[in-house]
Length: 354
Image (cartoon, rainbow, N blue to C red; front, side, top):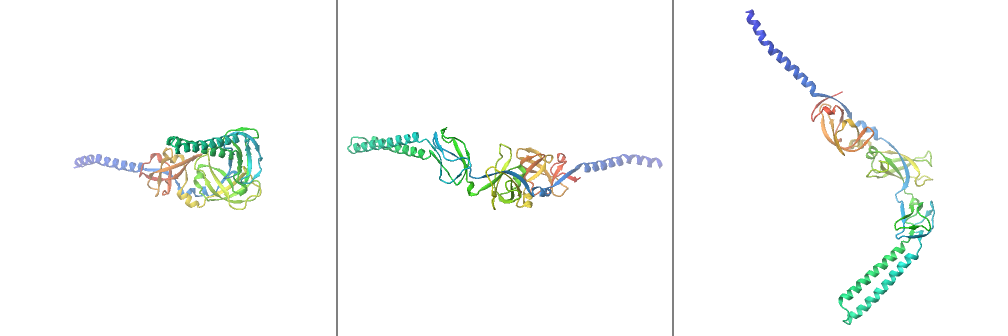
């Protein structure tokens, strides 16, 4: 009897050991499938866009480089840098000898074409000239008339007139200098109208955070201790190649500084109009390690909405800043971003927050 019992126990031992191994293996598999990760709550960036400090230079939105329509020798420049000017004021003029000769030549050509046409017209009435000859004479008359208009137009633009009330910013040529058509002679602006702007430089993240008409508090070195009110009137839609930054214009909306000039340095603090809305709709500054398969302006990240399951979603990249990637779109519906452990995740992976 004991022998039979021993044989039965020995026979059941392998089955028991296999069962234990399977249970252990299942437990290990379950542990491996739960991947530890670290999260970045996306609403944690709320305070990062509460205010933005920027600096720049004062300018206007109507700087103009003035030039002559035709080439020639500058006879006279009537203004100097810093002079106040009125709309329609004569600022500079070319020596008129050459352009007057061109107008006179065009005038004589037009008069000759008129005589030729009249003569051919009379001959045509007498059946001496053909219809083709009459038509050719009429075409020659029309061409001469247009040439006269061109010469007169060029003469009218052999002078430079002020396009608006403002100031002369720069004098780019001198009297007696030979200039080609379109060569800038004077630079002016319309500063007398009070349309002063503070043009500031912005990083990728700052540019994405602001909106048109966002408020700004402006400081001017010429008026220490005073704060002037303004609003964002323009955002550049491209990066500046000179310094690899974006720009924005802040238009002063309240009282103007008593002393202000083109190129003067200024500082401002921008206040995004709705920080909560801005955060919900982007942009987001995320760590480089959180971005997967980045390609130009597109990439992928893992997010979670329940701290239990990972989801892979596409995002739009608007730029990079120091150790951050600026994401402009794709995270609107995400609660938290997975910033550690992404390399081991797939869509639907079970996660454990560390």
